[in-house]
Length: 444
Image (cartoon, rainbow, N blue to C red; front, top):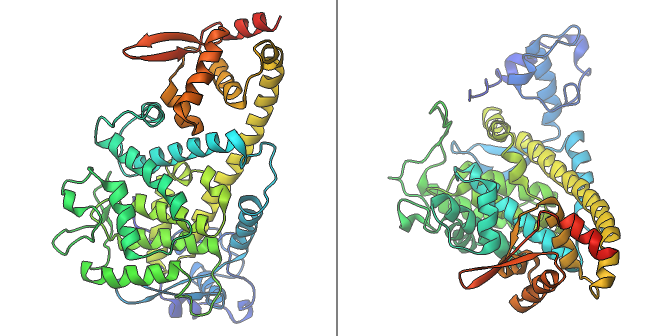
């Protein structure tokens, strides 16, 4: 990845602005908050050079900037603003991720809540780890997390650690952020995955030369601040996370969560696991601000699809005077996309469930009634012939006790809807290839 071209000096650009063009543009270009490296390739407005155009944009942005309590490694202040695209995205997130959200499928109640929550935690644990190099298939990782088996290698250990950390976030939502809590989260995500086990839950040292590189080209992309400055920087970050370092200015809760994510990535306080820790803190901050729907979405699954854009959002900030707006806009886009994807998924699942319930209604009566967990399993089994279910996987998927899981599976086996088999000391329950036919026969 190439480092974006830094903008020319603002004073030089301002001198290029024609006298009759001073009020012709706002902080956006074509409706977007563009970096100089992007703007210089765009067709020019009439009567303006690229430098003049950039000068007008930066002057308009200057009136919107808010100063942050954070500074870069050269002790220069970081800033951000909320242009119209950010305000629209924040409004969408407020409407769709907090409060009394209306959905086709009630995600916050009963068995559905448990199932969707587990699915989300699994997806975030896997993709957040894959972003930092975990090399395993999603299928194998999901099987590990659902079965509860021990990790078999370094990559699976990363994923298991991340899953446990994401589960713990739910218990920490009412806690204030402290350096000790950040260390504990880092210890959780990095346990048994570091070359030096003592590096878990502590700052990197001066002799541990850490920098961010492009793994394809080995190009150095970012040099974090000196290790000696990390205790002060983390204390300030915790104060900001708890709402104590705002200088009286309002910072939207979603923006605050994104800024926590950004600063851990910028400071890189640990030898490894910085990205996983940063994203865990983002989820902590969103949960603390009561954006409850975020428990059910995975931002890392979208970041993984376009990792270059994720890195570029950091680089745009660093090469344009520490304007964190670039990163904020990128993350707001990811969050709204993730929420929209969840709503679409829930609508699809609601339709599938209605179809499945119609199909299973007769057999449910014949079998003396099927509960929502059994209906969910059969719906999954119809789409995955040959899939194997165990008491442990069913228990973990629905967060129920082993006896309840065993009863669910045995009842389905008694009615011929699952095929039981002994494997060692335990039973497995396989989805038969002719399940559709069995359901139709049982319903007649």
